[in-house]
Length: 265
Image (cartoon, rainbow, N blue to C red):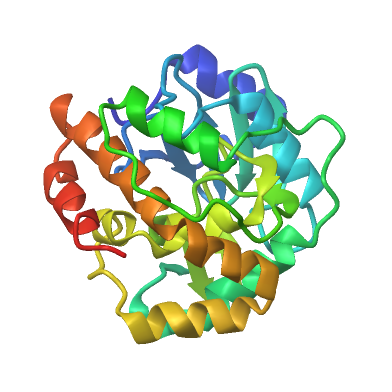
């Protein structure tokens, strides 16, 4: 359907969240939730059961993140929220591509990770043993990683920082799709962006070694980047298992994405 039912439309028009004269345009590109462009606003209605073994899908978390980041430029500006729906300002920009340079994304993630963690934001366990269990639960194989790791830094995470969720305009980077923010290990956001599978699913070629190095240098926090490098084989195995899990459920493109992770690290 191109627009939601009349009752839903009238509810948000009556609240002043959207202009009643504007057309509701259903946006494609994701199959987890329903999202419409209504003039200068985006209306996102969450569906139940959209979470996966790696990525959550929680309207409360998105609402909390957008409120916390209001005015920072790191997230869209929240307009209104109620029940299973959030409304925010449309970000004018294009999805990140390698020619934009990896440094801007690394710097934006560092800025996000420096933001205060909202009191009610959920914690996600991304320690080595937890990720190993998660990988095994998706029938993946767990590689060896060092017994001693650089310290974990707990930060405000986007949680799904793929290239597809990075919009670029003349002012810099804005992250979109905040359905699984949390606080946890900073290195995990780096791993999602750098993942060959997630770059492929975002329409890009996997980053090469020089681009990965440039990204980590631009992020600039040695403990975090060293932790990412130490855990890179496990991040790759976990993402490979996730892509295979998605492919087994008929999600297009994930079989190829899984194969790309097999060559990583």
